[in-house]
Image (tube, rainbow, N blue to C red; front, side, top):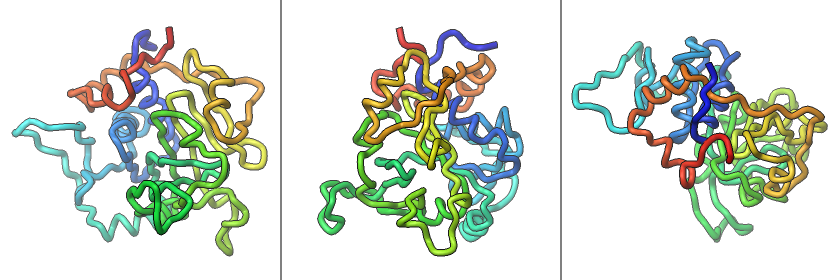
Length: 265
């Protein structure tokens, strides 16, 4: 049964969870509170073949809840998976990661490193490229953006290109666009992918009350608008029950400004 009341964060979690429906047995990594809850939700519902780590060295039979845990909590370890085995898994392609880039451009290239045109003297220094270059080349990646704006979906290229994308001028020798797997992008406005004409970013669904005009106004490059645009599916009551179990302290409510409802008034 579909829920009638839910937050925007819960709507985004359920949309992100659907990214893993057809992945089969794959290591899933959700970076950030909402992607982490979404990965756990998928493991407990739509894809029980998902593998998830405790972010240290164990694969889990059941995902850990987010936030502080009771003193008597015992995580359900299934087998050991140290750092070297993580790399083996990454290189094999049997992984799907959802991250939160600071910038995404029209080529699906992402930036988590720095802001500003001069990389030697950036306006804002962030994480560095971290594992994004290898992740983006080796396996599927999705992105979650809490605040959809032209500051994130930038007009030109990202200030620092941290991932492979669909820019023909940056395509590594021997690579083909069909080998690049930027799966979907989840924002507070809707769900998007890069399967439009000529790998253009297109609308997959819009959240209740969001308009096409609002999306284009907040995107720094043209977005492909399909003839038929569905509304993002509402969470089910069963999904919300699992989300409450995964996030008993309601950390999800703090991830979006003012914790807005999923259906706009």
